[in-house]
Length: 241
Image (cartoon, rainbow, N blue to C red; front, top):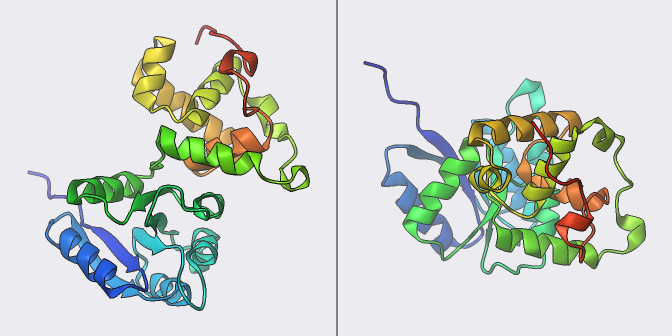
């Protein structure tokens, strides 16, 4: 009989005591999670994570000394001594937080509302710990809205890596940029979910991206997706696998 997997190690970074203790109590109620430390500032979060190497960080955006965006940028960069960088789940009080887009661009894997239910919290930590991005259509729409307000000069130029994608991989990337899950993409393209996972994995590798969150941002910043146009006007139609 195989032994259960080790618990997911979590750090909670938030300058509000109620948030830290509340989330810690909820996660500690489940054997699959363990709280290894907490932090009250972005600087503390970076220091603590370098010391205890958690799997997931619940990161508030607005904290003293160093905000969650800069802390995220430092943590998801190259970790010292080859250590694995933690996955960052941004905490926000409402889904239209003006800084969510910047946090995702800094390398966060998704975001969670502070008033989320216990089950939503548990699921979010599981998803992020597994290497997936917690990104739904509502978040995607927010990303699009934020991106369209950026000055043109700040937008990235088309990536040469896009030319490496097959027609099907490009189509899958367009659907990822719409916020569709693997299952929804599979249903849209009449293929298996495993096939979609393979396309997504190869696309991320070819573009040098970490996860789906980065893929969505890249799709807009490289001009593959043009806000305001229908998807059929932006990319190839169905192709054989």
